[in-house]
Image (tube, rainbow, N blue to C red; front, side, top):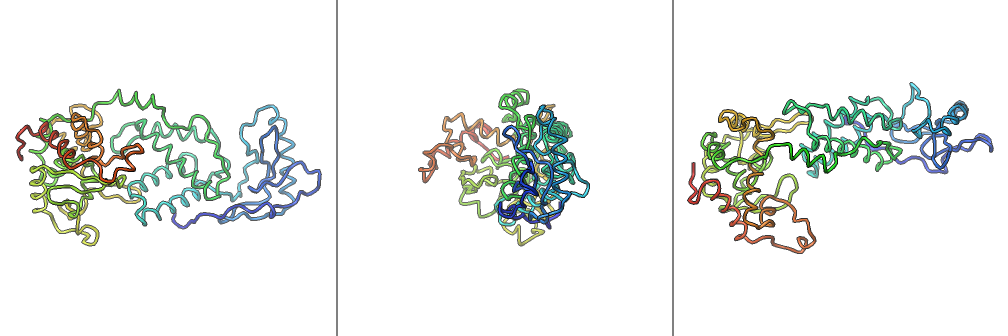
Length: 425
């Protein structure tokens, strides 16, 4: 996607619209640049009096504009009255039409989001997902299609493409959760266009283009394997892992850290046996006491830590690859996740997967939460995992669960995984 586009200006004011060519002319000049007619309470567009050029509505006072619109109105009126025309835009497509295209809309949206990445308001990972969705929308519908010509059939086609799309990381159809996320990201593109006045909303998505229902999401969860490890499996993984991966596994089961969390961990987050580390995804603060075994594993990994390939960016990063790079590297359209790759290879080597679906490094976080909730202290588990409490009382709580409550949860997980006495591997 090009980065050369900027958000357009609002459409011209009503006073800038052309006059009717004669008083009895059946169409009126809408502020969106069309010659329009309200029929049975709905406004239909039949031709243009202006076009958006470089984000600005530009007047085109040519005679053929309103005469062609009047002719189109007269020809299409019977079909509209008979209910045979479902879209409000009934202007014939013109080969040289220079209205807003999908490509231009997506480029403007991605430029806006890239600025958020640069200001640290948006993660590079999220930007990459938005970029991939925008590319998919352009590929399926056509990057040169005018946005104001899109209708329910186009979005139904896109929805079908999302269903058939293969997840490149797993080589299988996308899950209902991923389909729902793709739909949300698609609508974000068009909502940005409406909010910046370059899309003449509302967008006509139709009834098919919507997120999977709660029932479908529950059905998918019921049909999937539980994302849990047994204590024996985790001990086997710790024993067989290399020094860096072992430290990651301990962080995953001790503190519920995910892939991005272990990759971005900084020395400044390690404080006297505690992890003081806002969650990367939400920036919600969290504190977690570290097991002696976790501290020992981190010390071993730090002792073998190579020099950072990018000293300016990673001088404070705890865990680095043998090349001195982060284990997860996100680019505009690609993502390298060596946490997933290395952990997956270890699972295969130890024959732990055994046909179970959805099992990976993030399953350590699921396991931590499941065992931690056995204590009955739900708020302490939420705090340890970096989740919001979700009620009004949380906005008045200035400290959160006490250190004693946090330690009680963590100690319970340690006992369940390593045994009552614990013990470093």
